Length: 184
Image 1 (cartoon, rainbow, N blue to C red):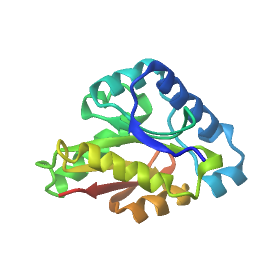
Image 2 (cartoon, one colour):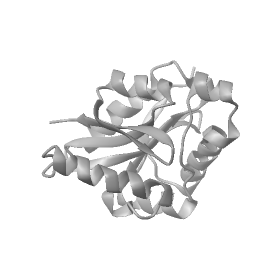
Image 3 (cartoon, rainbow, N blue to C red):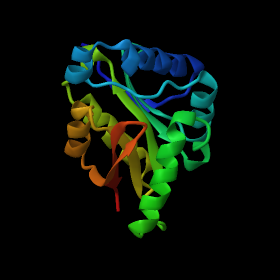
């Protein structure tokens, strides 16, 4: 059996495969049953933004037989205005980070993490995050992300990796958990 390889994204083809996996797992394309059982992603990136993000800090991917089966997007603060649906998260996060005296923390954003349905429950989520940390801990102290509270599968998986809740808030009628994984 071919081994799963964890690496940084390098090619436009890999970025396109990330977008293809996003498209299959975006909330509007899933049934309510699938959302509850499998989880979902909340943001669909454009190729341009995904590529610029990758050029600045290459994304982490899991590859099996030349197919991307999982990804973890690296999002620097510089891209905070490039994905309109994430602007409220960044604005809210700024206040929480200041209020919790974390302003000196050098962090990046987990832009999104997703595993192909056929490869779930095999530890790939955790391995992607550990590879993410190992690749980035020399440049960053932590990773911060936000999880929709309805996405219990994702919330549980993030806690299992080592994320802790910074705050919970409501945005556009949805409850969100702002979470952090400190590496220092």
